[in-house]
Amino acid sequence: MSFTSSKRLKLSTFKLNTLLAMAQAISGDMRTEDLLERFRTILNDDLEIDRILFLKFEDKWNLLLSTNCPESLCDGIDIENDLMEFTEISFVSTSENRFLQEFDIIIPVIQNNAPLAFVLIADTKEEAKGVSATIKHLNFVQTLSIIIFVAIENLRLFHKALEQEAMKKELELASKMQNLLIPNLDALPQTTDFKIHSYYHPHAEVGGDFFDVIQLERGEIGFCIADVSGKGMAAAILMSNFQANLRALFTHDITLTGLVEKLNLRVMEAAKGERFITIFIGRYNPTRKSLEYINAGHNPPVFFDSKTNAISFLTNGCVGLGMIDEIPVMNVGSLRVTSPSKLICYTDGLVEFSQNDKVVLDHSVIEDCIGNNKSIKDNVEDIVQIRIEQVEQKQIEIFDDISILGFCFS
Image (tube, rainbow, N blue to C red; front, side, top):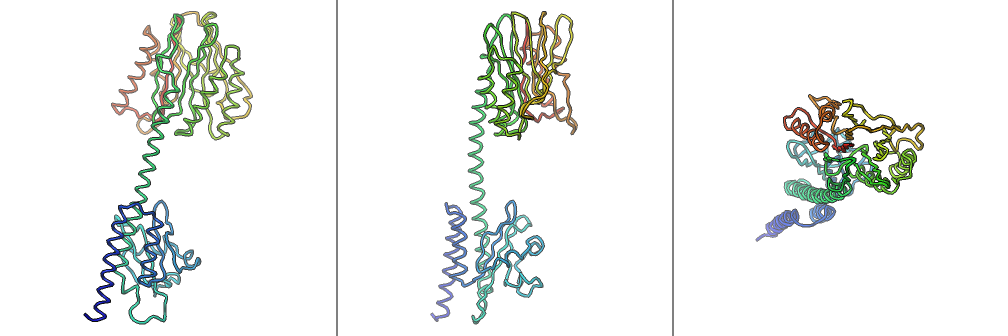
């Protein structure tokens, strides 16, 4: 075998082994940095292609590898204007673009008819004789570039899947923890003076809704329903912080105005003005048959007096918590509950929904279901069932958490 044939065989064997090794690396645990370093070593050291520019698109175009490329050269290439037109291997050493002239060849990596990577290479050793390394090894470099691209993309998708799975587990845990903060039906106090029923359905894994009922001294109960602006983990964390503060501060001898002022300060400290909480907070005294409340920017609960058949909305209050450092005006609402009455508190997911591509605000489902002799449990379940049927029949689309807290006062 001649020396030339032996050299060609050796080079072909090297290329074949290199491609096999790189293909195997796709399913391995190599880092992106390791793959790029191997790519650089093969081109720079083994093939003597000394100038490389590797650009890859993810959310934006990123420079993954640059060897023997001055910073001014990298900065001078505008990917959108200078490279996107290349959908095939192209020689650019005679290009009108002076920056592209610094390279011999552009190798685009195409997927779904769109370029997702560009590899620009050049052999800058002018003293070398014979065929340029970029031309001699062009097919091999193209194949290797595609394999490297696939390997890097697989690694990216693999790590993204791991992150998504970890986030999913975190959200599942957060959802379980948040559900522990919402009192279940068995934990709600029930007496001869009042009955309570509730419903809670977060729109996503974690929600920004919250409600609680707290037994106070002398037979009183305190209660609150709340909604954090925004969604996701940040809203859920702020709500759990709010629940802890509510439980710590709501005592028999604190006034509602004093309680709301303290809660507002705690929300301001926790949210730093980036989020706010709307709440409806109340206290019922069964001995005096009195209900006092503050509506801090929340949806107005619906009150039904069975003696007069009158329905009213409880609106007295102030701005939402966390909006301003000091609440300038705060009105406390009060009712004498001298006849059997019902109260339904809720969050905006119940009454605000999408219908025919428009956002609709409609309280009628509550008014229609509360004004009768049914129990508060039946009233709440009727409201929920109506909404479920409307969603199933595609009459409406709900896009927020739904919470309902219903009371029946004897």
